[in-house]
Image (cartoon, rainbow, N blue to C red; front, top):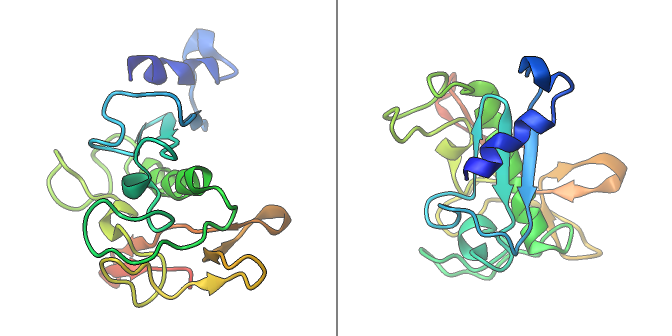
Length: 180
């Protein structure tokens, strides 16, 4: 993990002066890279200037790529079809959205979060497993369906890409807010 924490300094245009203003470096590791704590306690992590996300395709898809894979714990429903036909990549997209929301709202670990500071629930992690309205444990919610591929999604991206991104906690309504 220490090597991953050092990588962001290589991504800034002014690393001699340690200037990280307005930069969030994203480090993605492939499915064959083992990182301490991956799968056992996290699918990725963030700090002020970086986000790290692991590809869980072969190591722990039931933890880090649900609902596109059978969950390790909880209700055992059929997995959804991944919108980009790649369980590992689509899991990384979900985790990137989660960690980006956390980086923006809680960059120093003392910003927006719920619960104790030692185990904070951030904007997206407060809504774990919720991707659409009507979600409950084992059911991601009512999602959009690509009739051509059978894939489930809730977000339309660049060049017709479809993705599944998590709900975010809305402190005004005190509930999880979804795109669909």
